Length: 302
Length: 302
Image (cartoon, rainbow over all chains, first blue to last red; front, top):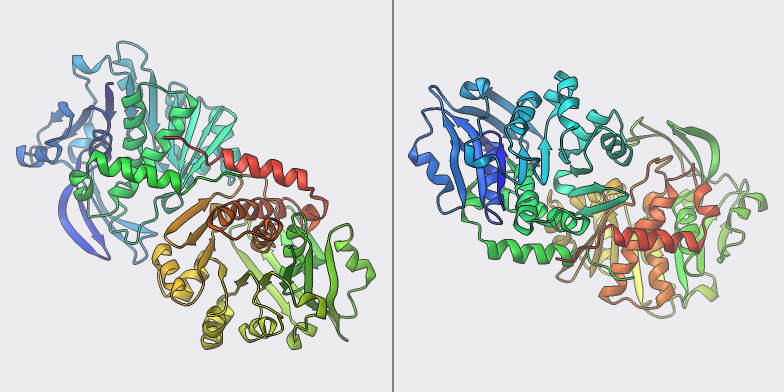
């Protein structure tokens, strides 16, 4: 089923304890699309500069990623540079150059306007609404990511957008900041009152929690002996989550629970190599095997 | 089935954002015994001073806690004082007065020497071995807790003790310190090579992980809207874990998995009120209800 993502396609410079790169393809929408497209076809809306050539575009080759919505603008692509600590638990942003992303106005190709599953990546909440205004019908599910920059900087715009969406995917710190609560359970309830009917709180190496109606589901992060580069883990989680829902065309409670497993699994693959290197090589068979392993890891019969 | 715990019975002074006390009954063995005794009879070995009177002993009344091994020595009981940060994520130790605990030499009453399940609380690893030497037969399961003080201070003594035990229950930081590894999976494997066949890594609000043979199990912490006082959560986890095993007299892989649920459940109750107040009032029925709720929270069918 049609899955639309709107977000950033970028160049990243990454320094991890295990290796580094001056320039690799990154951006939330890139990680999302590579992860989700293992499960369902993806329609991508983003903007890149003229430094993003056919060679770079090849990152999506062999995947069902529709690039009709990948706009090219004169100038340079969004660039982000970050450095991780030795234990990978913290990172320092060394540079953020918005470039063509600074004036990004998402335009949906005509063929995208019937998308049933929509993921609004972390961009200005006003632009996130602008995407929804272009849809021909109300999608089956609209999910949203955001960050501290918008939570603190444009709370009223964000509030307007939150009223229009179904699911919020957010990390634990941002959930607490958005809700003004230390406690995740109270934070999720507060966020329910802002609009979303489902709240997914991502907790990095500790996994993720789904709050949906009265139910809570926890999924662990898949334990890895070696984490190489945490970049894009959250975006890949979102890709696995949304990819599963779009594949099965169902958004009942059981589907949301299963989607959490695929989120966690795709997030775990993303961190196994530098940048998108692991996601590019990943197969559906590997995803399914790890999904089963993750479920075994949480399965208990009293 | 007979469950023996050796550890501290103490007085605590606690400061939390929600309340405080100058003097309440604490100590790892106290939390363990109150938690475990909801599931199986407990035999307690500890030392208290002459300030621990019949009035204090009443904390165990109504529970199947055998106090024949609670030694009374002249002087004051172990005293600990701590203060929690506003988000309860960190705590500061304000005072540690060992008092009669400084010269504690655990002596097992004759009737305790056939105990089948043994929990060696966080004391000098030499004393932990001394307990095992007093057993008439090899117990079915010996589990051990330890802390950074012994890991850094008496590594060789600790190594000798680790070779004699079946399961290590330890928090994540201490597991990494003991193994010399940032990564929990590699840390658990390293600890396997030191002796234990099962490693339980406690992660506070993030739950716990069981490493046993080739399998990993994760259990979440039960999400609470209000955490009042984290003191004793880990000890109560150990009590729930061991209590379940002793109750069912089984230590196969499935039992260990179920024991993790009871560990998490007892840990979650412990933090709901100040000190041991919640554990004292707790009923078996409440424990079972929360165990079922926790299992629902992790249950996924792909």
